[in-house]
Image (tube, rainbow, N blue to C red; front, side, top):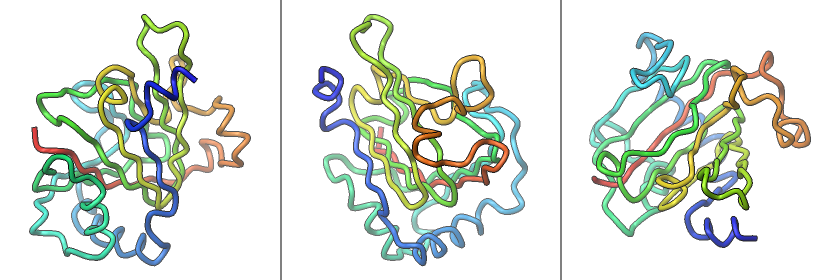
Length: 195
């Protein structure tokens, strides 16, 4: 309960934010910018593995209905004037980390495409009363993180210490999600607030 109270209003997950047809529409836009880019084995800070990414100005992206709805999700602060498009190989993951407030403050919004992943929010070490929170990021879902979900609790995707991917999660099995050898590539559209 303490975890729920602390995170209330700071973690939001919306399943089926877009339809399957809209997912195809968004994917075509994302693919136009990602296709042909080289795959990176690891980010310079070693937090992200097996991925490729590109930042695209919003005025170079068609203002379709799903993109307009995505931009309208958060109005407390202005969002940046670009999209962050990412694609992860099936074995790709993001290690748990805290966001840099000076580079992307207030909010991070992510729209998931194609395959399911698990985001884990890890409590600070001085909070032994709290347990990690797991969010199932299904295709077409959107997550929104603000406040302590970004700057106090670590957050990562498909990673557990000592494993290449987050395959031992209880949710992973109980929810009927396929294991790593069957996973597909995952794409996502990320928005952040202006620093």
